[in-house]
Image 1 (cartoon, rainbow, N blue to C red):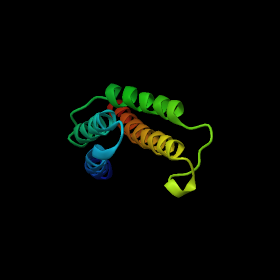
Image 2 (cartoon, rainbow, N blue to C red; image 1 turned 90 degrees about the horizontal axis):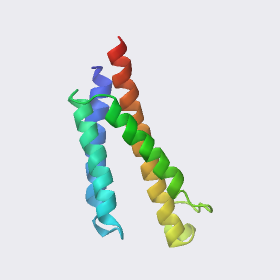
Image 3 (cartoon, helix red, strand yellow; image 1 turned 135 degrees about the vertical axis):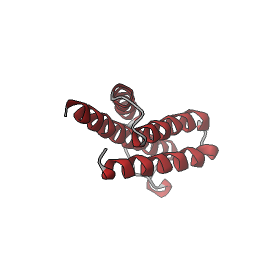
Image 4 (cartoon, rainbow, N blue to C red; image 1 turned 30 degrees about the vertical axis):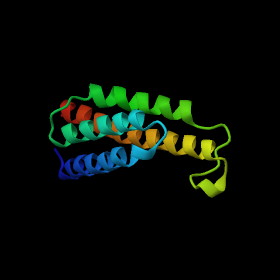
Length: 117
């Protein structure tokens, strides 16, 4: 595996783990701890070259579906001073799902590309 992708795998393992830990005070904390925890686990397995492309592909697509589902109709930014707390929270959660989606899809396409070579 290319060293860049190995480093990205480990980097996102750490970032997603930190994100999971920071969810402890969220109203729906267990839900997001599980989501970020699974993303961290998939990132670690990617870095260790122990996962096929199908799992990150499916989870990446589900992450994008979650982004579309959560995206507020009147997005008001990420800062609580920018608007309604519920709308801001939905926007933060939606973009968290989008980040997970993008990273897992990149990992899936990298694995798939590596298998074709």
